[in-house]
Image 1 (cartoon, protein in one colour):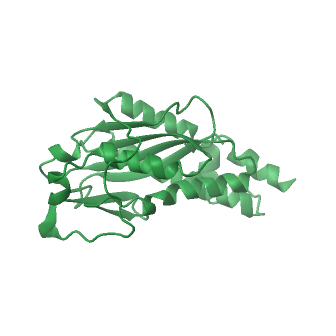
Image 2 (tube, helix red, strand yellow; image 1 turned 90 degrees about the horizontal axis):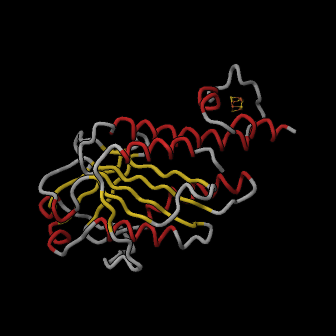
Length: 236
Ligand code: SF4
């Protein structure tokens, strides 16, 4: 599946335009993970990421093409959790290399499975809230967690470990952003487009209406190589 490859290229381009650093990928996240969501009250909070109108987005992009994502990696643009002193912008972008899953319907399920992993990563002192409609992700970080030394190395390693419980997952590159980079709007646009491609993928696998002229998804098929071919392949 290469449907998201051009968007992965765009993410990498944005990454290359900003000062970033690679964080340690830990075999064990070295941070307590909870079974259920934890409520962190405002008075317990050290700061929030991506809240109250600050730039915020998250998305996951999947490819089966070898060489696009070559190793497990955690990249940070901006300050790490222990160094943040006030509410900040936030982005979490995951680039995921999976085995060629063959059948297209299996590919669609694999993409959705990758997205839902975020509900299974619940670090202590790190309360995540996602708005699907707005493509935003907010995090409230507790004072206790900051005092205990929580870092994006812990959080990123937890995501990588959870994703790699799925044997189809080969490599994960997770990118955290806490700086107000100039291309935040482009990242959000990419998140919207990823969602559009995934919805179109579902459509081409299930819908028997093949009239491109009246189809609401035409703009996505015009832009993303492979979707139209996939739909008409299903017609045969
Ligand atoms: S191939 Fe045509 S009909 Fe099918 S989803 Fe794309 S635009 Fe719609």
